[in-house]
Length: 371
Image 1: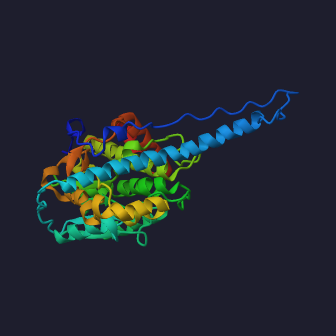
Image 2: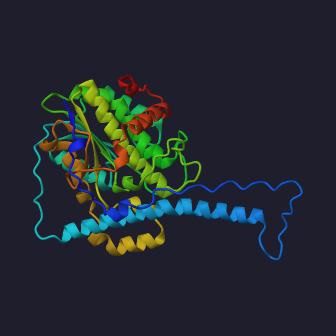
Image 3: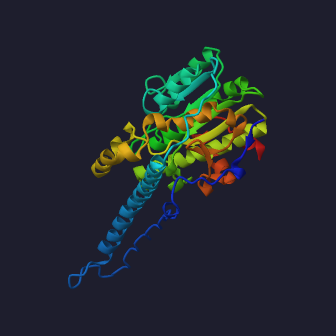
């Protein structure tokens, strides 16, 4: 049976304490009171009346609510990039791990056509694994219908499934919705993988054995440390920030993984679920950042960023390393067990997100049975 080691993980934080102590939110401005009957709302002696002042406060708070998520995200990215730089400058370094051959085991990798996903696929295939690449053309993770059709096609092959790597994602896209009306970061990065995993879970359970568990690997990022989960506004309708929406989707993936492992353990199935952090990687995901960030990236990526191949290393480790046999419910960074943000271990929050996600994707909430 898989065991959760969340309580015994080593606190190998990939970020600085200063980065994690950034403010996690701001209050909202109070709605302006309407003037009482007969009140004089005209401007006197050049001073703005009550209405302009209130509108100015609202505009300032709106701007601040969008600026803070960006500040938090860039601070955490800078911290991780500096950590990677220091690690790269250390003399020597650990040799590349050698993994056992996979003897035709079957894996599915989302977003496997480029970037981290491509190098994950490439390495798993070299180990002898049969890899099915899930990309936009074959399974649109922004479409619940497309996901269900893909799963039906996969099941029709009557083949096992030993490894599922939830890797695909978007970052900092402008405000837009998926085919099903979900905010794109939350809908594609999180809900798409939530549904795909649940629809494939029975096949994973049938494929896992006591000596060799099937594995679910979900790719999050250090941005989850500054993410905030708004259960009453998961679609970011109140005040959209691409930085806040992205960080929320990555936090949701961590919460989802821990809840999934809890349910798998309670079920006694031979499946493990872990979440990985690839670090700051030089991929196409940065195409939506501002021009100043693109200039900084162009000047520093060669030294501070990981290559896509380096970024894939933790996903590969989680997928095939014998050290993780039977081990689930952990967060991995640089192939090491690392403590995720404190809120991610909140089991009530995990349960509530799971329940809400089941409603959104219209699947049965099996997680409510263990309460």
